[in-house]
Length: 277
Image 1 (cartoon, rainbow, N blue to C red):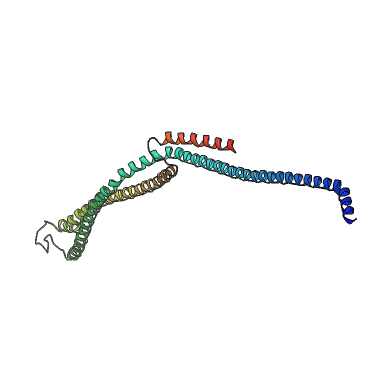
Image 2 (image 1 turned 180 degrees about the vertical axis):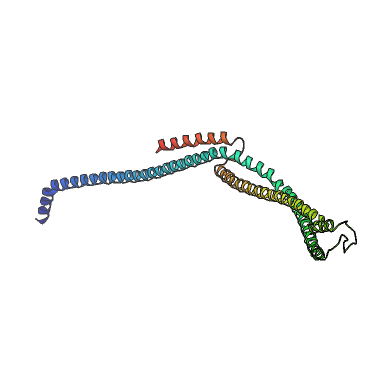
């Protein structure tokens, strides 16, 4: 009886079992498809993420390339401005070097002439001092003689000179001779004239020496200015040459053409980089 009941139950649940089995199989198939779709989406998402990262890296590279191109354009532009300034400065450097070369020998020649002029002044100063001393001694001697003659005049009472014994013919003639002798001696007159002449010569020589002194000072000042200007212009040339070296060029007669060519190239590279971003 129990076996018959079990078979009866089994027969009654068979359709439901078959239905549930079919439903379960369908759900499993749906779940498998969903898992497949999910995996595909994950792969697509991963690929999209990789593509996004690649795109971001490419964009960064393009932006960096654009920045490099912009910097290159700016650098070449600055150097072109330096080139324009140097084109105006270079003639000044050539002129400064020529002036310096011209002036270098002048101070030495002027110093030699100044030394000779100073020696002449020294000799003339000694000559003037000697004449002044001779004149001073002559005046001293003459003063003593005049004092003696003046004293003698007070004792004259006849035509005969008490000093030399000469008879002048009359007292009046002797007194007149004494008065003439009391006047300044010919030696003093001559020494005064000589002193005036030598002093004039000394003034002339001193003036010539002063002219040479001023001339030497001007030469030295001009030479110093030329050297300062030359140093500054050479510093500018060194800075320009260094700037050219930074972009692979050197200072030469062909620099302008090469710089223009490079300017065109970096501008084209900048436009290309800008259009690629």
